[in-house]
Length: 86
Image 1 (cartoon, rainbow, N blue to C red):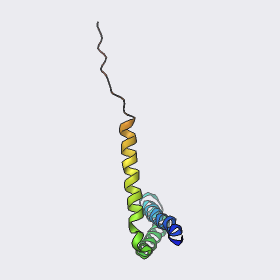
Image 2 (image 1 turned 120 degrees about the horizontal axis):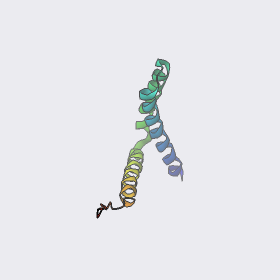
Image 3 (image 1 turned 30 degrees about the horizontal axis):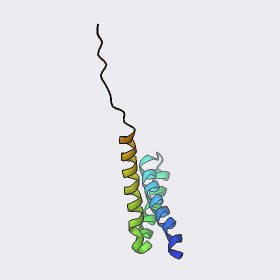
């Protein structure tokens, strides 16, 4: 049962890492960039301690990419050229 509680924590840390890395890139003020950078480094330092479940966020990310790719291809409608008879 305790392992079920850890899975959301692993995903949360991975989300924080991506969010703080985006903050470094997207924020315009130096204070924001430095704060985001420090938070990103601290999350990266904590991430190896999640143990053997490092693969869970990777599998979730792969699943999301596969689903989005499938969804994009499923929604494509064939494009037919209309020729005018004029």
